[in-house]
Image (cartoon, rainbow, N blue to C red; front, side, top):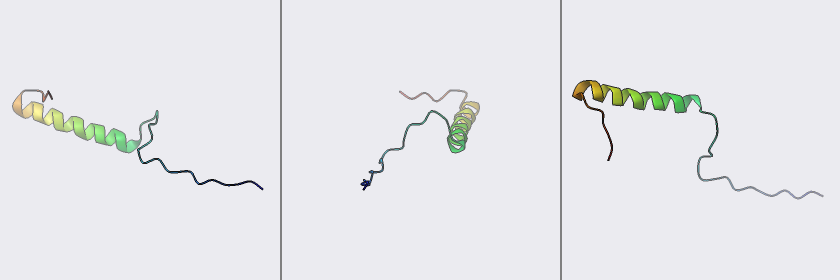
Length: 48
């Protein structure tokens, strides 16, 4: 008889090679925020 083991689900998000649609949408939204800030202030927001 084969024994079955429960596998623990990883608590962290798995790293995948491909981007999902939501990842692309989030990146586009973040880029738009940076662009809007650049247009308003004339400076790129740079984190130090």
